[in-house]
Length: 241
Image (cartoon, rainbow, N blue to C red; front, side, top):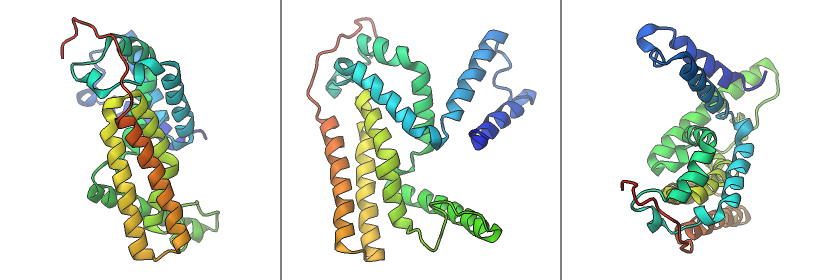
């Protein structure tokens, strides 16, 4: 009963790999296959949103314990990763970054262009509403985002970005300064969703200002990360650019 969808994804992956022409692990020895299998399962299981905030906490912990290494000027990364950063951040937490990258990709619609974000968001909401219709038919509790009679499409995306995605993206950008364009795009999309919501829903001024405050807060956090104060960081002289 734990992460049933994600467990199904794991099972299907290894089921597909029983087909010889599709088995990407066929040249692995037993030890390498065991390690790869473990990595795949751990990464896929962390795409379950039930794990989301635990993942955010882990990323924040890495930043807090490696503050002097992560909190650097972007110019420090122009010629490659500094040695200290590679050792204390990347190599020390490799499995965490596998989980983070896969999960971030899974929820990354609001990090794309607004037009692409809107296309995918509408499809996701359609899926939720279809599930809600079936829940109504069966007489079982309706999921929080599944009731087409209560959920505003444009408003729902604001909540998803503000409460779920932004804490993850901002935490990731703190550790990976070169990812700041993702944060910038997220905030720009958030603002465009806000304008679409105002135009189509005609909400009360109080609600408009409350959501604008959310956007302003996210924009300020992202801007601070882009212009963070430079710190020195040792670079490996032999590392290729």
